Figure 1 (cartoon, helix red, strand yellow):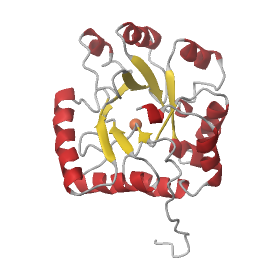
Figure 2 (tube, rainbow, N blue to C red):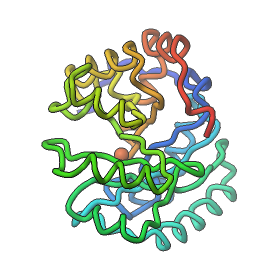
Figure 3 (tube, rainbow, N blue to C red):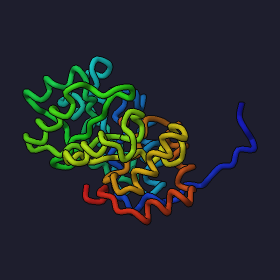
Figure 4 (spheres, rainbow, N blue to C red):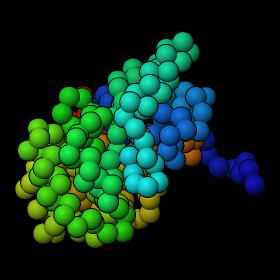
Length: 245
Ligand SMILES: [Fe+2]
């Protein structure tokens, strides 16, 4: 039921120092993100309202759930970009990349890599939320040997990666960049992810922040988060690499 007493926050541009959102699911109808152009346009407007100047979209590549093809995603992105331009959205669409799950379908990708990259060198990868794939380090090493820089999406959401633990240290020593979800800082994924996200940032383990926006629920949570003073202080206090994208 609609709650008349729930406070409505006016979005504030607190994420302006980041410049670029480099993780979201706003190519319509290709994964569990946006379902239509209108939903994507609304999300772009939210991202602009909370301070982002540029957005890079990262659809899921996940076997067997989202068997996306790079050329198809590029074509769909070009159409979306044109529609966004026609509607005059106040944010730059800065390209399309992927969020590649390291799963049983990932190894074959390394034989003939066609990764959709963030900028000209970064590939965004994610692990399963439940357990890490065997041979994962070797696959990441293979990517690095091929010249890619690897960004691990939302490490705060993997309960098996303890903050400051041996496994996390291994990944950092291997040169893996970490991207924390902004909404984790507001408790969107629960208290544990919030605690872990904050500890990782304070521990200097995080290079990128992303919204991981999927739909209007995430947009509302982002608008609310933009009024959170603690989150604003984190954005202002720590240096991230989003602005280099
Ligand atoms: Fe994502």
